[in-house]
Length: 501
Ligand code: UD1
Ligand code: CA
Image 1 (tube, rainbow, N blue to C red):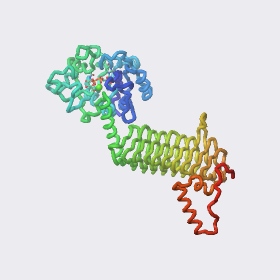
Image 2: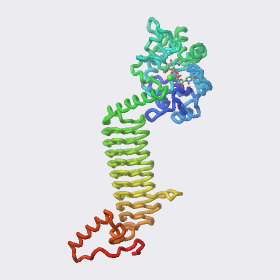
Image 3: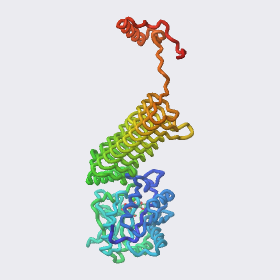
Image 4: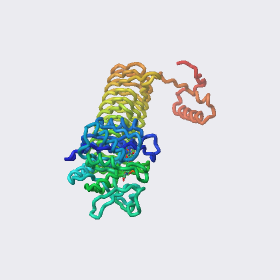
């Protein structure tokens, strides 16, 4: 991306982030489906540094492996005590020198808690820094409320002379609205020697990285600021309110990008799309949709209203309504919902249907096959063109083990069936309503398991005498007797319940 590849990007992530009040380290909190440091590492890798160095400390047993998962080549430098950002960078440079024997080249330093930072912005900083041949270039921006940030102090000629922290700023300095984002491009050799000269003689008793700016100025070296208008990229989330605000803003940016790429988002305010989601043109997202993780939605598909799809693939032209899905695949032109729950391992082929109040898990539903109403399908294979009756339970669990059910092609199963797995229903087979299928059904067979119906005539009249039901029955039977005078009268002796057939 950048014509001037930096030697290294050093990401600072050793602080604990106490203001999050969390057992999870601050930089691991998620924003739009990635940890904060995940966004930072993604931006850092976009400038193709020769080395990525992460300074870890607090919670390093959580943070270290997380970084190495995203960037296996990353150098982890451990800062045992959090003595300030200047100290942290020194620890990072020591680790860099150990890895590659040098600090010669451009070294970018950034914090691990700025999830909106973009690779293009870092590339712009690096290019500007290299072109100007400076010792230091700080990424700066102007804020209406600069409280808490380091202020950029400029000399009469406009050159940067120092960065002063909030706690150390006098009234005049505190009034400056140009702030340091905490992101810098440095000449690596200069940085290494300047860091050995900074002190902790300040309000916090810490070694401040920004103090190297004053050192460069005193040495007569050039320091510049690369100013960006989009200051939100530089904002860090220090507590959960800021985390939510940055999350909403990142989501807005993600949606904006998809809309410009040809996706219809009816209500951006209630639509959430994670950073790694992929959408094709002419996808429509209706209100109340969350697309999470590695979800992919193909052309012309319509999702929503009110869906949560995680790591799910939606095929071209498919329709998904009021559905919760995870690790599921919905085929081209298929239809899901309303009120469906697709659990991991659900695969619905082209033109198939998973309908209302249906739960599926670890199940393959073939092309054009339908599971329309009130059904649980677990650990099953359903062949193409088959229709599963309303209210069916695929009983996959015997209390100890899970078993599979196979239903063949073009079968039609009756309403209110139970398939007691393991069991196989052949191609073109039919089952009657209420069947409990415990044995395999051969292709083309009709399976029924319910006994013949018994009518115990007059039972209500005798056993529930005087109830509204008995009265209703009596008058119905009288009416019938009047119109069919040749039919037998009400049975004088109602059969007992224990009567056998
Ligand atoms: C820092 C800058 C400030 C800048 C602001 C931008 C300093 C002294 N101040 O302030 O000029 O305007 O960022 O957001 O640099 N960290 C370590 N080890 C430490 C201390 C911090 O790794 O010993 C890490 C933190 O985990 C964090 C980053 O460095 O990721 C910045 O530290 P933080 O305490 O948030 O600095 P700010 O007070 O925000
Ligand atoms: Ca901060």
